[in-house]
Image (cartoon, rainbow, N blue to C red; front, side):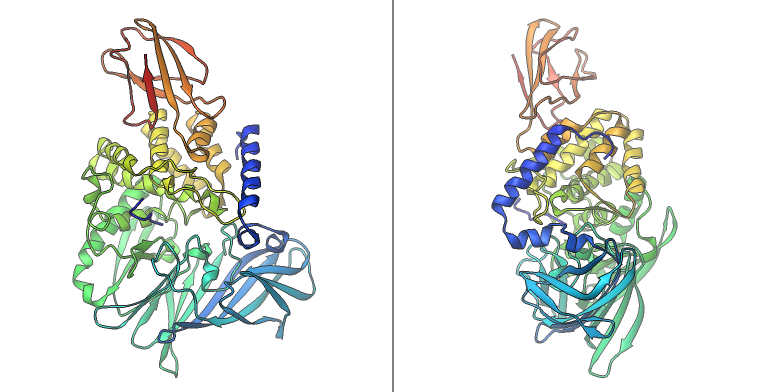
Length: 553
């Protein structure tokens, strides 16, 4: 997702465990039962593993009303006779159907609890269908507040889209609304008035003319997909298609734009092809060849809907024509195409299990913008872009949110997260190894859900640097560390990190007397370091690439 313009592998430590426990205790004090029902994996949710959905929904645009059903196919993880699914309580659960009969159910906030007549045994494959209807929440500021975005194009025709990251897919359709359980495959069937069409994720396999002035569009998704990525896009679209020669062979690329904007298609084609080229280099093959790659024009600015990216940047470079870094590098490409496509790797391929780890999605995707620049304009340009983005960092709260309450961390997860990855690359100081790490993440965690420790563990192991304290500082804390340098004699210094993280250690580059970079390894205890030719007057730290404070005396 984009931010508003205003703004493991054996490396777990006791401190990390204690921090998580403290975080959860704080969350329990602040958040209510509805938050826990939405964000916590209770036995009523973990007892079943979703395998397949068939969402079948009719959209009455005039009444802003939806009705339909969703088939849940699942495997029992444990023996159970009761489960929870989710649907916002302003929508009606009309019936829960199981083997031709209606099941009893109860509701608490946005959670629905279903009772089965008999126990479903562990390992069994089974299914039930939820029939539902109502007027879904209307988004007033999509994509940030979520819901249905009911608009019209300049010709007065309906132009409707969904966007629900964070708020949750259960704002408009029934599902197990937790990021940890991705459905393996899905069929999305959407009925809309004949004057418009619907575009959803995956591939269009059938169009069905109905008798009541509606047409039903059936879209099949072959790859695992997270609930919030499932999308409807309804409009008077022109369709363009081409084939991209990618790492895994031919990739179908489709563009759905309002007919009035058909003449602007070359802008999208140029940016999409350049983006795929850069990101397949850095991250490996596009993760959803079977479902294709689509850009779909929307009235809202954009969202990373898997294989059907929402695009609303008005066919211009930059972020609505601007460049948050103020370096000029951000105006050489279309921000929405690049950023939202980056999420196909980080967010859609690799997905955080809990919304509290949404920083995984946004930090890497923010950094993907810099890697796009790197690919076409060079490393110095990409580093300048990252450095320029620091102006947007607030340091208001940690970029990791609390677990189990459906709460993400600070908006700093974008720019501060991008800075973190640029620092790690700088510490490694080996771009071949860095490329291997980025591509390796998308191989090891291909189509998987992950958490903080998965990412920390993998990056530490592959970089050869214990990043435990670095991650704790930049992901779980608000402040930034300060490098304290005291000159004893010319060429002899006492150096340490001043950090709120106990035992903080992080490699950092300084410059020797000839201006050549060298790596030092301070800890939170003063160390004597002999640095020939340096004095406090010419002691320089690479603060361009390291987001730190420095004091020299």
